[in-house]
Amino acid sequence: PRRGAEKLRVPLPRLIQSIEDAGLNVLWVADPMHGNTVVTETGVKTRPFERIRDEVMAFFEVHEQMGTHPGGVHLEMTGQDVTECTGGTAEVTIGDLELRYLTQCDPRLNASQALELAFLMSDALGKMRGRGAVGGNR
Image: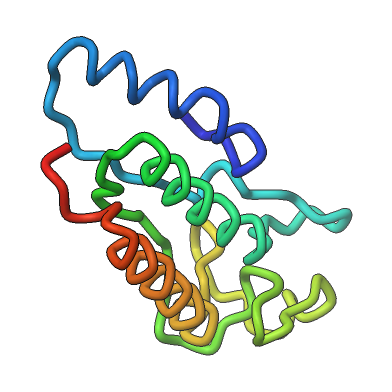
């Protein structure tokens, strides 16, 4: 389901527990892109980087608490210097969207935003591994 970070922390543990109770073996993958699409006052679709980041981190935190493995993250991104998603250290603003909004479909993270998120995910997973929370059998 398309949830967003604020709606992930309560239902995901219940879903994980239901899957565990049923003895099913699943691959847990987050899609932080689609639940975080917003439309500006001028009708342009965008995604705030901070919401995407927060949903990924919530996904990792819940899996650590549940003792399960966060198996993957789906991102829509490009190596191009686009201005389709706001925020991040690139500091793309709503006013910047018109500068290089090139997508034919949904807004994508630009190269800077994608790398920033990759490093944040790597750091979070490294800390989880250090606490023994990643790499188990669940």
